[in-house]
Length: 149
Image (cartoon, rainbow, N blue to C red):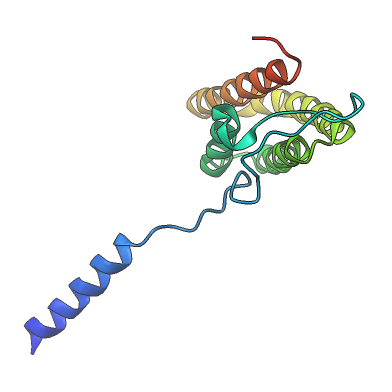
C-alpha cells in the first residue's frame, strides 16, 4: 500500500513538473508577428515578437530581485511598470506614449540611482547589472526605431 501511495505521489510530481509554465510575459501572444506600417510619420515600426532586446527586457523584469531598501523596491516596481508600458506603446505604434514612457524611465532611473547609495556592496552590484542590461536593451530598441544600426 505504501509503495502504491509513493508511486502515485511520484507520478503526480513528475507530471506536474513536466507541464509548461504559463507565459505571463508582456511580450506574449498579444503581439502580432507583422511589422507595423508607418502612417504620416506619427507611428513607429518594430517587429516586437522577433526583437531579442524586448525579450531580454521581459526576462529582466520577471527576474528582478528584491532589495533590503523598501523605497528602492517601490521605485523598481515603478520602473517595471513603465518598461511594460514602453513595450506596449511600441507594439501599438503609439509614438507619443513611447516618448512619455521614455521620460518616465529617465525619472525612475534617476530616483533609483539616488536610492542605491544606501545599499550593501553586493546588492549594489546586482542592481547595477540589471540597470545596465535594461538601459542597453532600451537603447538598442530606440536605435532600431530611429533607423540606426
